[in-house]
Image (tube, rainbow, N blue to C red; front, side, top):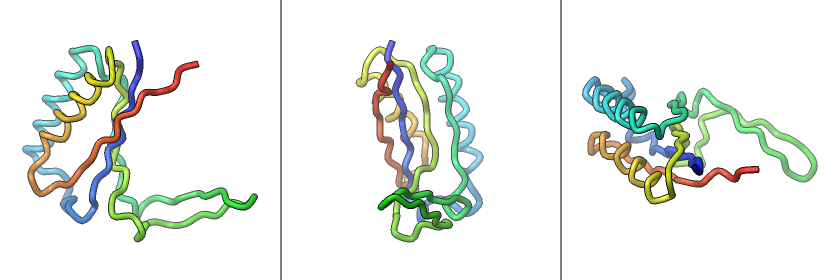
Length: 118
C-alpha cells in the first residue's frame, strides 16, 4: 500500500502565540486516535515556529545558513503526517479532516504527496 506525506503549512500570523487551544488539542487527539485505529497513521509531529529554525541552502557550489524567522515566507511548514493509504484520494480525505479540527482563525494548507518507493 502506498505511503503519503501530508506537509502542513501554516500562516504564522494566524497561529496563536499561546499555541493551540485546549479544545483544538482535544479534537486533534480524537482525530489521531481515529486515524491510528484505521491503520493509516505511520508518524506525525508538529514543528516549532520558524524563528527557532535555520535554512541551509546549496547554490553555486556553496552552502549558506540563514537564521529564522524567514520573513520572505508567509506560510511555513508547521508539521507533517506520514500515512499509508489505499490511494491519494484517501490521503486527501484524512488531510481535510485534519484541517477541519482547527478553529476558523487558523490558515493552514496540507500538501499531500505520494512517497516514491524504491
